[in-house]
Image (cartoon, rainbow, N blue to C red; front, side, top):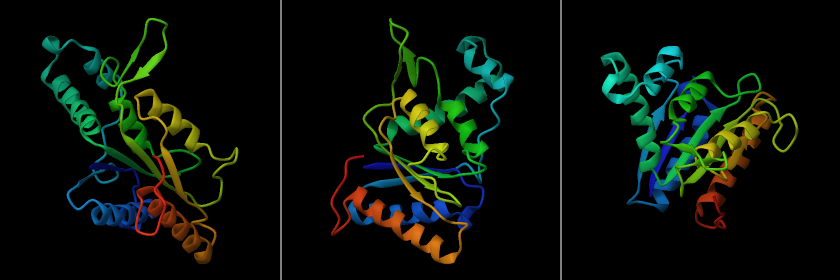
Length: 209
């Protein structure tokens, strides 16, 4: 298995979503010693802001692009190729002000490519083209909102990931991170147990992605 991990936090090693990733990677390497893990840290190496120049580059025919436009498209191609190459894709996503980090939004804008990662069929229905992947979202938030109307992150990610073919993601949250040390430790422990169950760690029942 090739595992691609997309880190979206700006807090580096202090990130709670990064703590979940570290646990997942430890388990993956124990269960799949012949597998590989690739990290893309959007906090440390953010994708440039998606602006008019970026959109113009992506919609300009290849033989008409300027050098600057070609560089923009090459960056997008790199991100897209990583997704196609991976067997398992993990998004580590903190919740900032009820939504996803700006760095992750720019990343999504760079990988949502008509004719490459999605297309519209004859009936005008979008079809995602990055298929057959195990998709996991590891989230962390200060309060507790999973499964309620206050969870504004999961519906968006579920929709936009499915739009490019990354359907049926498994969502695992560490909640209560800002509700005191005891609540934070409980939230992390619960999330780690769910990661173990998802991956089929020793003593855990394997769950579908």
